[in-house]
Amino acid sequence: MSAQTDSSALLTMEDFTHEMENYLGKRLSPGSDSPATEDLVGSKTGSDDLASSKESLVSSEDESDLDIIDVRAGGQLEDLAPQIRSGLRAPNYNGYRTFPSLLLWDEQGLKGFEEVTYAPQYYLTNTEIQLLKKHSHAIAQRIKPGTILLELGSGCLRKIDILLKAIDALGTEVDYYALDLDRNELARSLQDLGPSNFKHVRCHGLFGTYDDGQAWLSKPENTERPCCVLSLGSTIGSFTRAEAADFLGTWARTLQPSEGKQQSDGQILIGLDGCKDGDRVFGAYNDREGANKRFILNALDHANDVLGYEAFNKQDWDVEGEWDAEGGAHNQYLVPRKDVRFEDIELKKGEKVFVVHSHKYDEAEQRELWKASILREVERYLNDDGWYGLHILEPSPQAN
Image 1: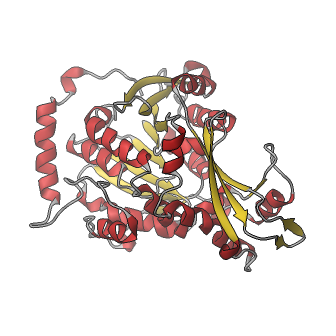
Image 2 (image 1 turned 135 degrees about the vertical axis):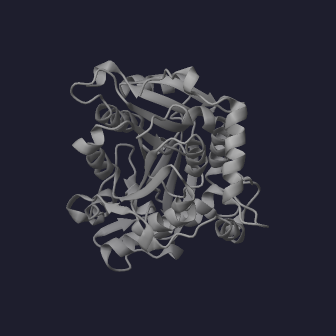
């Protein structure tokens, strides 16, 4: 999609504010506190506050009314059992045995991570919400009518809700697709979003992996339409730096203009964390309430489900996080509290088993990532400290 927009077609900020006030007023029921006007994060902590926040979401959707498309290759998700066995049998390139990070993202894992985002120390969500509130009007005006909005690993939809409201207030007809790995959580999140409350935004779910979503978007009926791929929450940080470049490069090529078109109608909106303050980063992933610990430990329950028997007892494990200043990443491990035997594999007490990392990208590293991904940045919106940003990217001409 072109970064240039005809200024004569744009609403003024005053007009936009008036439209948003009218729009949000229609979404409020008398006497209620709607998340349309309150800070969805605020100072909420713990499971009780999380539950009360969820209950405040406006939704009259029945699950049968939701449009959820199964895009899984072969109608099923990847079998993680071979990855569990191979990862525990031999160390990875960093010398650690591993659990596949996809174990984090079952139904309970998605709920657990949502709880993490409400922890006061987890600055990423608070910061991104404030950026979306401040810049949703500008971002929305870059969205063309007929656009497919595809959010990767959508999870809880309270952030995208801010942008969708802005698009709806502008009267831009779009289709929003939330892509995630668990159908039950996808249905719950869409119900919370309340698709029927939008006039111009049609909401759908895609049940599958990133690869499944990419294959779906590559279908001819989709490539003919403008598209905006969204990756919020700095989730790109869970890849190694090389993997992140490959991943974004795949999407850049997918968004290249179709045959006969000179200009791409594709863009990518990425939320990316560049904070290198070790204490602050460590606190975000090691919250005092223990939400992150519960989230990581749930990977063991998911592993048991995948294997079909109780191979791992959570009581035998602890969670350890560390800030790697040299690598610019926070790493998380599951650590046995005693010697553990899994099939024919022995894990010693205190041995760190790698689960997931969260890479941080300073400005120089961002430029390197865009270049390696065959993307060019057309706009950025940074927080006051300049270390967290929403970045709008387009495929470079050499991506095709």
